Length: 193
Ligand code: FES
Ligand code: FES
Image (tube, rainbow, N blue to C red; front, side, top):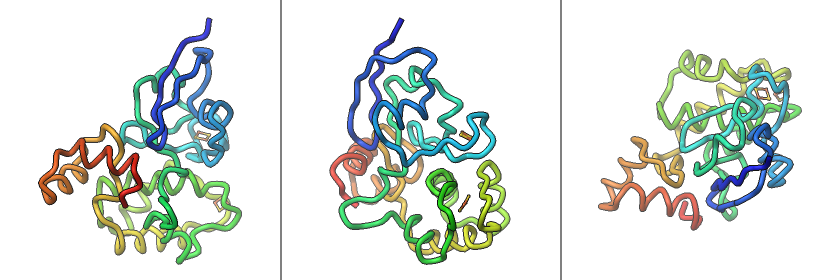
C-alpha cells in the first residue's frame, strides 16, 4: 500500500504517494526528476547519492523516502542561486576538482557537510571528511584543492536550510539580529545568497 510523504526539497514542498520500499535517492531522481543526485552502488559505498537531510549529510540510498517525510532535503541542484554558484561549486570549477563528474554531486554535498561543521579544515581533515565518497578519476588532489578554495571563499550563510538550527545559521542569525529559523527559511527559499 502506498504512503503519502511530504518532503521539502531545495525549498520547494512536494507531496507524493510512494511505495514504502522506495529509496530516497529514487524518490529524488525518478519521482521528482532531480537527477543531479547519482546512484553509484546502492550499497552505501560510493557516496554519489549524498544529500543533506535537515542539514545533516546522508547517503540517500540508505534511506527510504518515507523516512524523509516532513524533512527538508538539500540536493546539489539547491546550492546555486540565480547566476551565482555556491562557493564549493566554484572551488571545484577553479581547481579542476573533477574529470568525468560522476562522483561530483555527492562529493560536493559531502564537502557541504564538512565545511558546515568545520569551516577551515586542514588537509587531513578534508581527506578524512571525504572518506565516504569515492572518485575513480581524479586521485583526490584536485578535490582537496577545491575544498581549500571553498574554505577561503565561503561564509556561514552558505550552509542554511529550512528548519536547520545548526551553528552556522545561528551565528548568522545572531550577527544580523534575526531568529535562526528566519535566516534558514530565507536561505532555502527566496534565493537570498
Ligand atoms: Fe549511495 Fe553509492 S549510491 S553510497
Ligand atoms: Fe570521475 Fe570522480 S570525477 S568519478
